[in-house]
Image (cartoon, rainbow, N blue to C red; front, side, top):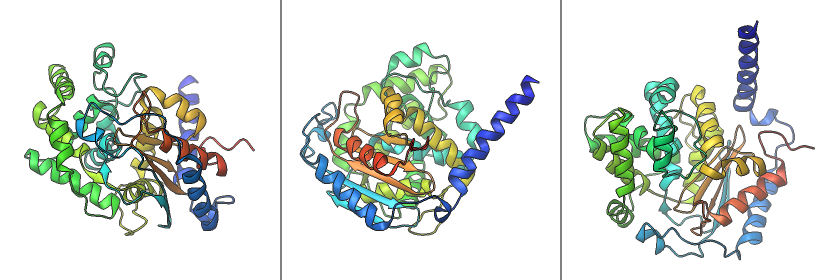
Length: 342
């Protein structure tokens, strides 16, 4: 009886996700109009442009040089409409926002179960680069959105060499963004010179047989991945590809199989903000991923992606103004995946 109830519960959850991801935008109740979205982006920008809380990430020297006053807000809908205000064409390093997209590539190549078994999908409740988490949790890598799991993700990308592995990741990101992205070399050099902690993560993974290529090769490719430059608009297209069930709304190209989209979004919701994932889920209610480059991408399944960019971070490493802007837009339209409570 218990097994049957579990199967029923799983079926209900699966049906709910299918409704969220598969139902066309037109079939949803009262989606925001283009005029409303345009106004909301402007309102969010105006409301938070003068916030000066937080500081640039200074443990990567090149990130500390990024002008702190930069701020942009962008929305790309599942139809490919673009609404953007502020510094939305400034190319910043994608950093940890890259993690769910690489995990999606691994799923596309090897299936969702490979990620669950070889990396894990549980949140740690600790900071993104926690060594303690790798010692407290038996699986070691835990999930693909913390540094240990992200390095493991990179190691799982099918390739015969480091350059081939990075080229596969960059090509994947290009298809998601509908753009030709490039590495910001100054950021890469700065990060490669200061990534001793990530090297430690890689060796810990190797000691537990939870990394699937040479540890230092995986670390270097991961560092280069984090140094890819992306604008707020381009990142919003990447997020909108997830919102659109894996089809890029700008190019019309199927990038990710629809069956993997709920898997990616579920990890983004539970671990995308690291030790602030709970309060983010509580306030914004959206799957999202943050990075110390100042970018945050949030996905409204079936509707849109919302991106905020601002280099000033809080103590958890999340952009202060980007968080506020996305939360404002989510609350304004009742976009939380849990419902708007109205």
